[in-house]
Length: 337
Ligand SMILES: O=C(O)CCC(=O)N[C@@H](CCC(=O)O)C(=O)O
Ligand SMILES: [Zn+2]
Image 1 (cartoon, rainbow, N blue to C red):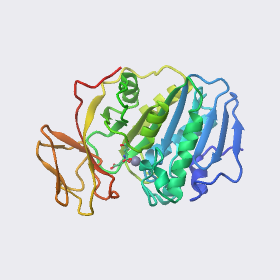
Image 2 (image 1 turned 60 degrees about the vertical axis):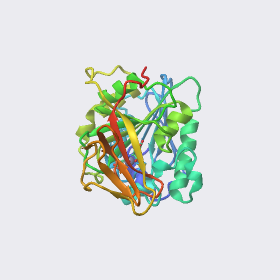
Image 3 (image 1 turned 135 degrees about the vertical axis):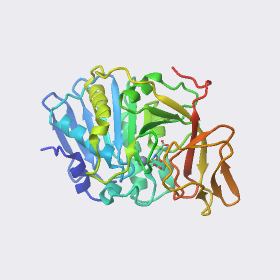
Image 4 (image 1 turned 180 degrees about the vertical axis):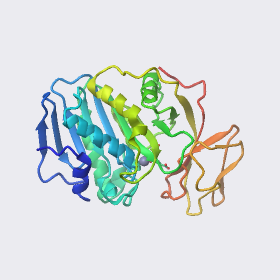
């Protein structure tokens, strides 16, 4: 019998997240869809006659970001119970099960900085898990001429003036896709940030290596398991089921999404790094031109010539990592298709 509670099954494996399950689980649903699990928190779904999308849905790359984990778990249960028929090839990933077990963002390493081979510079369970996730995504996306997408679901540490927003990874000059922004808007994600530099995040990995339509999607604030209001993610659930069922979306055309350019990526260079605003300052709080945002020893980080809003400020990241983004309204020069 295939366990319909993927989350409990994953947590029951404890901290063994880079080792295969003692026994591979495999099951064929009534509609012919084949479902299998060989590693903790990695579910592979192969419909009998798949439609054109290969869909990766991930959550728990940060172990304490529980709302999207609960959402994906509920979606998997619905699929396994036959509540909807999955017509797209689907890979569901719980990124960092060991951190999920501990209710922590990470054990030792921020897993969302370990992709694109960055895991090779480190040792330990999280580096091994990131390597496994890369190999799994590569194997899943190996089929040619498919439409690939990857939505990597997160929640933010701070309050946010914009509850749900997506980071659109750098596309090396390829146009940003309005169709994807419209999909996100139907999901209730009303804000997108266009990145202008390569990173080592999971969504950048799928975008860069496999030309997938990939995003980091922020879905509210971090809360412990059991304390999330999943009704706030109802629109996202509905659109994911429509995508997976290969049905037209039934939601009315969304309000246009607000798009920002990432203006600055502030890196923590020394242990002297300090943010120049209160710890409870919400994401998307605006600062006037010239305002001091952070001090890193002698180095001052200031707003440029136009007002900028802060996103993901965090003085407690490892040296060399991003401690804050700033964003500005999107410029006219961005290529969209
Ligand atoms: O709230 C925060 O400070 C962090 C929330 C989070 O985990 N965000 C992602 C964004 C990844 C990206 O830029 O694509 C992260 O920091 O990994
Ligand atoms: Zn996260």
